[in-house]
Image 1 (cartoon, rainbow, N blue to C red):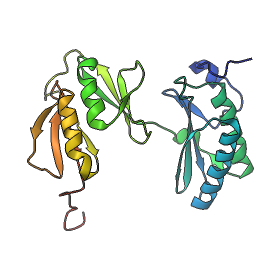
Image 2 (cartoon, one colour; image 1 turned 90 degrees about the vertical axis):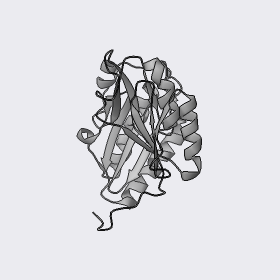
Image 3 (cartoon, rainbow, N blue to C red; image 1 turned 90 degrees about the horizontal axis):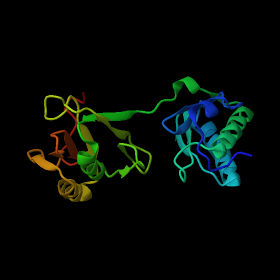
Amino acid sequence: MTDPKQVLRYPDIIGEAGLDDWRFFLGRLHARFRTGSFVKGLELVTRVTEAAEAANHHPDVVLTYPQVDVDLTSHDVGGVTSRDLDLARRISAIAAELGVEAAPREVSTLELALDVPDADEVKPFWRTVLGYVDHGDWPEVIDKGGRNSTLWFQDAPGATGEVQQRFHLDIVVPREVAEERVQAALDAGGTLVSTDAVPAYWILADAHGNKVCVCTADGRQPPEDGS
């Protein structure tokens, strides 16, 4: 009998029967179900909730029009276990009962990667400024609420300074927490680059010069022509 807390490896997960609706990457099982309407989506989510409660094992579910996205992982052990496989099969069966089609080719996860010569040197800054948490021993920080993209630190010994940076992150927060977030990020090793656009945004940088903006809704108006 498989240990329900044993983290399964990639070939074992892919080889499981009854998982045609699902794809595995980044430590999770992912599925998308084309519900076609918000009402049908809510019906699917309700049935999935009942199954999750019965199994005492709960997926991450996003209901939108016209689809439902489901992710499965065992948070207590940091990976996919037999509990996830069992619930995945049950969710697929529920979708089939409701006449809902799976779209496994459409699933994806966006993970941002930042080239750095030393992840340990800058990770506290990024964890703090984004309001994220460490992901175990992995060189990355994650949104504990599961809403925003993971930030991965790619080992790149020569990547320092502004020449290498071809993107920056905007983290948008409520106005009442902006200064607190900025100060916490500075305390975590960051530097203040510019306050010229405050309160719309503060520009900060980590110890390697990689920039990030802490943004609010204040002072950020759409163009007058609406474009």
